[in-house]
Amino acid sequence: MSNQGVKFAFVDEMRGIAILMVILVHTSQKVPNLSPLIATLAQYGQMGVQLFFVASAYTLCISIDRHSEESVGVLSFYLRRLFRIAPLYYCAVLLYFLVHILRQFFAFGKIITVTPYSFENVIANLTFMHGFVPSANNNIVPGGWSIGTEMAFYLIFPLLFVFSKSIAKKRFAYLIALFLLCFVLNLGIQLGINEVTHRSMHINGFRYFNIVNQLPVFVLGIIAYFTHKEYIHPMLYSRSISILGFLLFLGVTLWLLNFQGNWQAAIIPTSSAISFIFLLNWLKTLSVNSRTICKIGVVSYSMYVFHFIFAWLLVPTILSKLPHIGNSDIELIIAFVLTCILTFLVAIITQQVIETKGISMGARVISYLQTCANNVSRA
View 1 (cartoon, rainbow, N blue to C red):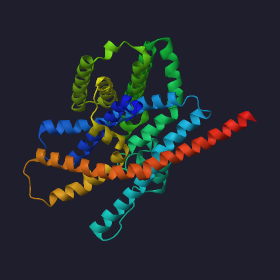
View 2: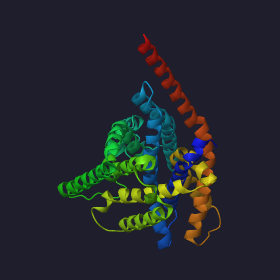
View 3: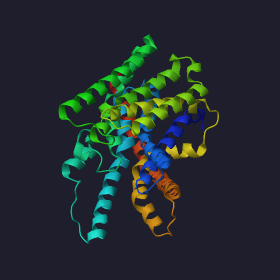
View 4: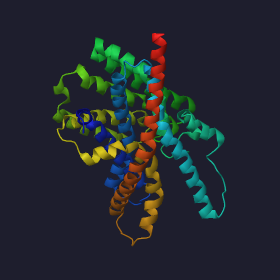
């Protein structure tokens, strides 16, 4: 592994932890009668998406800084993101459509409906606008809401990064003020909508998934980047403080997940993201990284896209054919391990066959555009 790879291995660890959390919560949805403690821990796994968002914002900052001298800088940023995300996602749209059709055929002997695969919903997903379309938000590709939310963040990221960099150079406290502004504005917007519509925002609903509610999470990832780069004393993110901060906000998030109210859904993503900033700080201080978790992190996007096939369909079917275990918690552990192994094996292939080739294609397009831009500037 190169020095650069070692330097940022903790980011792959974050992604690895994130996908394991996500797989845990989705695996648990097919295992009834879990003990209260295990059910709570499994439910917390959904926060893995916020960990993905923090890691994404952090690595985007690294990437845009690294490519800041490119002649087509902003365009190359968007092209890298598009060729990184789109090929695999488009394959997922097709795959889950086929799964939808096949499940109906085997269950009923005929295709009853293609809902929710309407023309409008599919187009919204293919153009990555489904983060703004309730009917298309999270049902064309399971878990696809996070892709729509992340793509919406990509649209504003270059401007947000430049602004964050400019205010961070003046005073680090301005970055904190930016985060607080995003957080307070979102909270005010969500509570205002609650009052006007008389409908609370629910966890895992459209408003919860939307970029407006998730933006403070991404901003925290940007703050973490500037924090690590140059703007704060290392003692403030020492290992002991990082562990304590992570545990504190982990506890806050678990409490909020089990709190009955009409406002916590606007706070949970941010509280979990704060805990993940401390986790990021702690992982960054480690001299040795887990190679297994890092390998999982490298293929985490493929694992995220395809793990539903195993967590919701194949593994429950396999376990239903085996002798009954009699303990739901043990059954969850077995299902989780099986899902992780099978998904990882598939992800190794799809990461090489689809993701890597898409990234390479994007690099060739960017190289061509840079050559054209350089020729024009010399003319």
